[in-house]
Length: 317
Ligand SMILES: Cc1ncc(COP(=O)(O)O)c(C=O)c1O
Image (cartoon, rainbow, N blue to C red; front, top):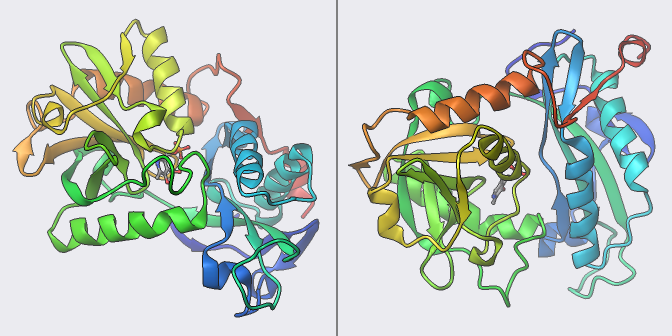
């Protein structure tokens, strides 16, 4: 069984067939290459004592199908088929854990932006991925800044769709942050309120209350965000979805990013201003413990968030 921390695997699901890594190619004239027309998901499969477990798989597939609907992409696969495709991709690669990337792209070999009639292809890729924001990010936290780039206004790019083109703004924000020696940038929304990171939602804690930006602030509706809200409420922590002015970050007691890749990553400082003590706070640590405990099968899963990859299937590939 492969157990690398970063890198490719060997088999990719391609519209119902399992193909070799090198055969999952598309043409340079593909619509997606020129016009950014893809929608995708990022899903983690965790190693548990009972084998690989995919975290909130049906919820991710639902968001993928929603993204297709927003962009009028007629994906020919049902949600059930896509769920099974993800399970099969983990099994075919014989990995104990990985990051899954289902992607639906407009391909073909035609010139022109009009997408109707352009072929649509679907892939599920497994990638070995360790800690997204750095090896000790989950324990020590990261330094972030407020970005000069903003999330799209509500009447521009639809932010509820997880679409390839949305990540152009994420790239600009992330590059700016890294060039200035921060790990991540926090973008404001079109109205100047706090939105989210390049690939993460943001939470603040002030006086024991968990605060996060609403969907109206141009965020992606994160599945980790939803998990954190549910865990926090069950831990007795009050949660408020509200517009967040930039300066509220600086005076918060705790701040953390949430996302499939970033998991739950504490933030040490923003714009070089220490957040709280500058170390991961108690609310973040309690939620992180519960979240990772459930995901890795070390704690009971009262929410039904894990889809197990059956061993018989894994062994049969
Ligand atoms: C822009 C953006 N915001 C938020 C998130 C967090 O979403 P999730 O928790 O569903 O991974 C992601 C990651 O997918 C993202 O790319």
